[in-house]
Length: 370
Image (tube, rainbow, N blue to C red):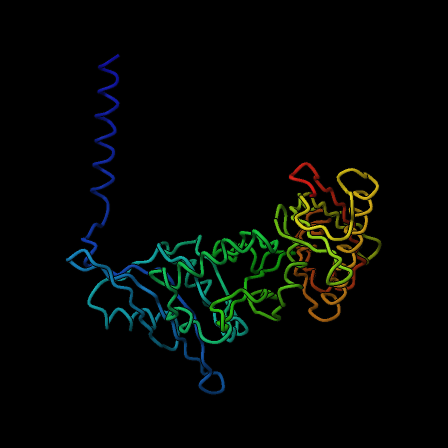
């Protein structure tokens, strides 16, 4: 038994040695690591574009200290930007640790194709980095200083990661998610939209895309409804309110979204079934819910109707104003009736009949009323 144990250990050491021999290893003091990257664009004239790519980096010194520096370079294309940057740096810069990819609004409206090509073809990039659209220039966000953080990239990444706890945001805003959504049949890309306000960097809405181009920025309330209609298993707080003194807050989680699709001729119909399950955090409307089951049922019915109304209001605007299938109903239709039929799902969904059903289940087994 001992011989077998030693044999396994020796084999493990040999495998580890071979792996390490194959690595291109250099002292950390000789490289610069990227923790955040931005994409800005400026039109210099008709059909003349200049790209600007700021990078937020960690530079390591022989003393063991670490410096956070920002490097920005411009060029006629992204390849030229990379080459010109390296020509001016006395250390090799490496990717793979970047936390966020910041895209200026101008770049997003121009189109993400060049960015996606650049990132996808580079095996060193971090596919799990969050993608965010920002108002103004991406460089300004990478320059931003937040007390308690070594760099703004970690701060912004943390904001995106934590925001879903209250606003039904999903975790599908990463680089790899953009790869699979842009150009996919019946799917659309949506990304968080941030601004620098008097309070600091904040999420102020969602950017919606048609293929690789941003077409609209939604405010926070519309973004919440978008996420409810589009995503599975998201969490947040919804409120039913009659007056400043009459309201109820519901800390809810959605289950798996269920979509039914029907077709009659060229006309499509969709039914979206949503379920909210959670606890009541503030109750100034329905007295005695813990003892009176009728009050509980009334709340569940009223909240369900309110969320259905908000869903219909959003869908009406989506069909008439955005004209983009930003809740990915086309994916469901393509799965049922066949793919690769050269169908414009944005147009199909914009002309479809869409029904929303909401079921609310309130758990009253928490601390209850007082």
